[in-house]
Every structure is written in C-alpha cells, then in structure tokens.
Length: 295
Image (tube, helix red, strand yellow):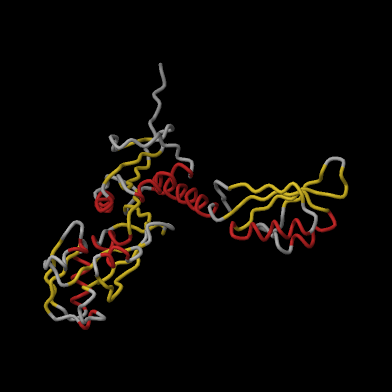
C-alpha cells in the first residue's frame, strides 16, 4: 500500500504588490533564504520551492485586514497604516526602510506656525482620516475631513482644503507645492506584523523567519575581513579588531612568523582597520560582504 505524504502547511506572508517597499521586502526575504521564484506582477501568489512559505501580493493598506481575516499569517506594511486602521494585529519587528513622517501642513503664506494657531473649523485633506481627526480634535479643532487617495499636497492651492495631513520622507513634495509643515504627528517605517492566534506550528515558523531576517539586516552593517599578519602583532591587532570575542587566528603552512586572521567588522570601520593592519605589516587583505550573521 502506497504511503500518503502529508503536505506541510505554508506560512502565508502578505507583502505590498508594488513600489519600492515591495522590491526591498522581496529582496530581503530571498536573502533570508526563502528562495522565491522571480517576481511576476501577473502572479498574486508565489510559493517557495520547498512549499514552506507562500507570498501573497496585496495593496499595502489592505495587509492588516488580510491578517485580521486569517488570510495571511504575517505581513509587511507601514506603521502608519496599522495605526490608521487600528488593526488588531501583533507587531513583530521594525525594519530599517520606508522611513517617513506624518505631518500637518498649510500654505506657506498662512499665518499658522502650529496646530493651535489654526481656526477651530478647518477643511482637512488626507489619506489618513482617523489619525487626522483624532489628532486635530485633541487639539480642540472641529475638522471637516476630505478623504483623498493621492495628490494631497495640491488640495490647498485648489481651494479644496485649508490643511493637509500627509506622509513625507524629505518634505520636498510639500515644498514644491508651496506648503509648510507646522507639526509632526508620528514617525513611521516598514514593520512586520502577525495575526493574533497563530498556532504553535506557525508561530515557530514565524519566529524562525524573524531570526533569518534579523541576520540579514545585521549582516548589511558588517564586512568579513581576512589578512596575513605578523604573529608578534596579534595582541595589538586584537585591540582594534575584536570580532565577536577575538579574531579567528590560523597558522600558515611553512611560516612560523605570520598567521591568518578572520574577523567580522563594522562596515564603517573597514577603512580604518585596513590602514592599521597595513601599518602593522598586514598583507593579502581581503574584504567580503556578509550575507547573514546569526548570533
């Protein structure tokens, strides 16, 4: 009798279907070892070759709702979106991209320097109606919220709004539309979230994935350095190349005076480390990227 093989339940991961954040997340997951096939905008789902992980491509703003509905197990979205939706999800990790600020802005010529200066009744254009309303009402205002899905910055010049509440990374778009920021509401970045109530099996898979992602993010800030150095300079070298505990030292065949050191260093300290190694007689120095680093 032929044995029936059980299919492993994949961890379902929701990520943005387009944009720079989508590309970064896709690259991050592949670097973490998930081995997804090449991205194709026509495919709304892809599964790893081993069947253990499945990607679902949806609008960034919809990802928290997909998790709440149990359609996905974990998701990548913005902190601002989770806050706007007041989503019932668990935040797992902050990521180092997608950084921006949600701000209140008015026309440059308006005589307002902060929210308290604004008239009591104001027309507010925003893609974040819940956050905008709550923030302005706490400031004692009575905002009329005009919900827009884009091009928020142009609405004051068109006479549609007095104020905008919008996301900005540099403020350049606001300035180009002759708006000025009068207050910051919150800071946001890409985050990883999970639906509540994951069973122990999926919880373990999610935790394993987080470890892999952290190892990739940490490795981006590191370089792997190898060099041939005089053996009698090791103690001096250890003072500026500690590695995790100390450099790995290996003997050289037929050479009792020199050794090979292997060490992971901060990327921003590589140049200085190389200069010090050369000054101490270091030769054959190699610098390599680090894909992952698991502590």
